[in-house]
Amino acid sequence: VIETNRYFHYRHPLSLTRPYFDATFGHIVETANAAREAGSDFLLVVSPRFHHWNAKESPDNWESTDYALDEPYQYEYFRYFEAARAEVDFSIFDLLLAFQATDEYPLVLHDDPHWNPSGNAFVARTLADYLIDHGVLEGN
Image 1 (cartoon, helix red, strand yellow):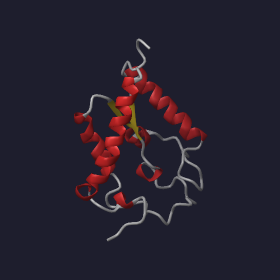
Image 2: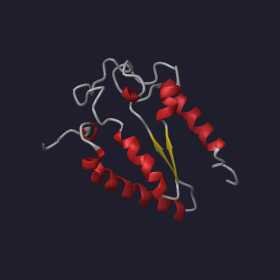
Image 3: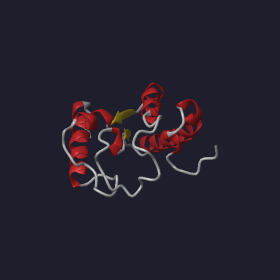
Image 4: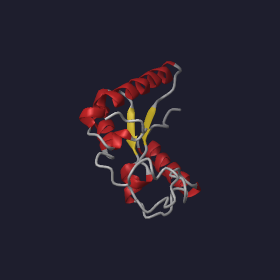
């Protein structure tokens, strides 16, 4: 199958999509190294899309023809980044559990899967809590 859709990784197991994730992760590591060379800390934040926590979000999603809300491998990238934690010396924070645990609704736009103001506020609070709880801001 020749995939032309950017959500192809939702339809194939990690064993087949790993090379693409590895290439992307290589760029992330380069960015982390550049941040350190510039004297900055680096944190990778992995973000879910709405259907990972509530498929009722964004009922008129303009991307609805690009992927189903229950693709067979839609969680593979979380697995990839979970395993990547052991390979790097920077933190990786996955927002999936926070989104799955909240009862706030809606967090994305009605017709677009990007965060609405409530979603942005939720992520800001969640990320701030993570940075404080993990002492990321100490000494800066």
